[in-house]
Amino acid sequence: MRIASFVYRQYLQSGRLARRLWSLPRKVLIHLLGDPTCSMQVHGRLLSMRLSHSLPIYFQDHPCYDRLPQRIAQFVKRKSGHVRLIDVGANIGDTIAAFYTGPEDQFLAIEPDPNFRKFLIANWGANPNVRVISDLCSSESLEGTYRLEEKNGTASLIPSTDGLALRSRSLDDILKDDGFAKPANILKVDTDGHDFKVLAGAKRFIAENRPVVLFECAPFGNAMFVEQATETLERFHQAGYGCCLLYSNLGDFMGKYDLNQLSAIKNLFFYQLLTDALYYDVLLINDQDLEEFFQSEARFFADRVADRNLRPSALKAISG
Image 1 (tube, rainbow, N blue to C red):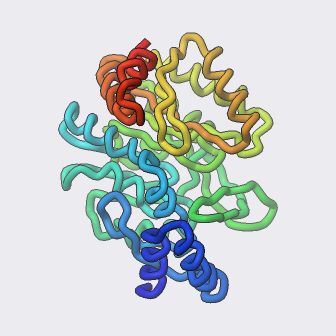
Image 2 (image 1 turned 135 degrees about the horizontal axis):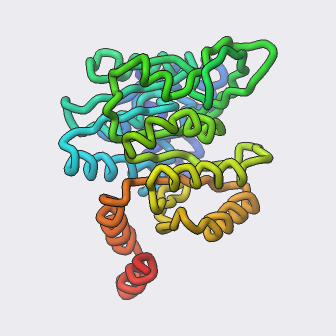
């Protein structure tokens, strides 16, 4: 682990030319030594992961990448006094690290991939406020067989006639049987293509609790992507959410969108499909608190405009 960690840190801390040089021993370790375990700093916590995991690279190279959860956590903590997160697609536990604000927080971490779950347990298993379960979240509860496709720290589960036997359960059924995080105030979903199914299986929980919801919105080859994305947003509107906030895959703010009129979002879906190199993170907050968080985000990102003279214009544009 020490050698792998050292190589990865040198790779991250190097400039463009030196990084190319350090990429060679990293590739050798990954391909010839079976992708060894390393220990890297993520969200202020040392996390174990495979050397091939790309999260530290994105975190290093993109200043807004994966920083949104920390701002959400601080906002929710201020409003509720605690964070209670349901993390669907928990991976190695990096999202828990991002949302963690203190020992009073609770986390229900759902990760069906045994390879990631091993690291999730290594990173958080000793914490009594983190509960790890292995079910595959979907729109309904049933048994199935899936093929795992892993790449650079992410994984997709593809239905297959042979492969990994998994129990698929709706989040509503999981919460009915397991009250650990039942009063959760945040739901995060990142399942590389199954997000709409997960949310469809959480209709009761969302309607009854109106938690903060953060989910990934990406095609992943789904021919029904636009229809399912639209249906998901309409369901949120029916549950009482008035607007959503959109972010790019690198964490940049893309504005507030009315769920009563989805034409603007559909135009973004068209651009998303056209570029084939972009996904969105969709954030929903109950209407009572949305405007406060939105204004905070607008100021935060307006202050990031490189030309200081243009920052007031940016703030006017995003604030409408």
